[in-house]
Length: 370
Image (cartoon, rainbow, N blue to C red; front, top):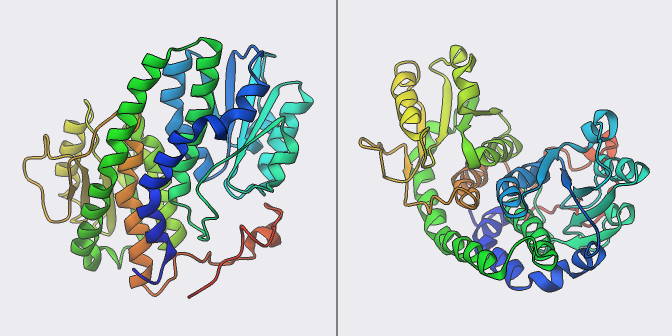
């Protein structure tokens, strides 16, 4: 564990989230000032990988707060095939490292069509900042790790704060409403150390069973679907085995046919009407594979096993994505080290240069092995 910066970054997430919320007015000032007098009727959030998932994690909150349509999309799809019929559209491009050429292309396509544009990145000299009307920095520091963790929640809350402050200025919402959201956010943030501790202990219980895994599936639903995708991404980035993530209803519609005794399934069993069905799914699939891992609060889980990560989540439908991702992040951090892989370093640090997907800057793409 001490060999990887990744675990440190996971543990820093609560501090990062608090700092972004507390410093939101300064962080979002350029964005809010630019669009103070603009009429916006819909928002596209463009990003790849973790940035795309962060947009999905923010979507439900933003739509509830703004009463506007928020569409999360991969930048290449927006650039090459999306047709937008409303000129009062804001396109936000997000890239933690800031050098994503597809995000640049998405923002350029938006500019060409006359839409409002904003860029969001941790990198103060991000390439994407040169291709949008405003730049907003994700205050998480340079996360010197190929698989981003604190940046996932940090990107989500930055996007939330940008549009929260804009909505207040525009009179779309009130300070009283926003303060109630902040109270909910803080309850989730305060619970994160408990989730990290429980997740670390859980990994210790399952590691001998999990380490030989060659096929891994993550299942979830509702507001935690972003964590399904992000959790699958984190594990495949570091453990480097086949991992897929599915909405639970999608899993019901055919995926179950492929389950054999070699499949390892992780269930993000958040509160809601799908939770009992998730428990029923585990019961059925336990006849086919012994490798089932439930992640959730104790409520409704009557017969947990040592394989399950049972801890009291806050269960906030809008903000618990910050909690439910943690067990998958911890797994993605600790398992590769037990497999002899440094999770901080991508399999090929020069991959993006070779394939032409990022303009490397020698800072956000420089990884060192301790």
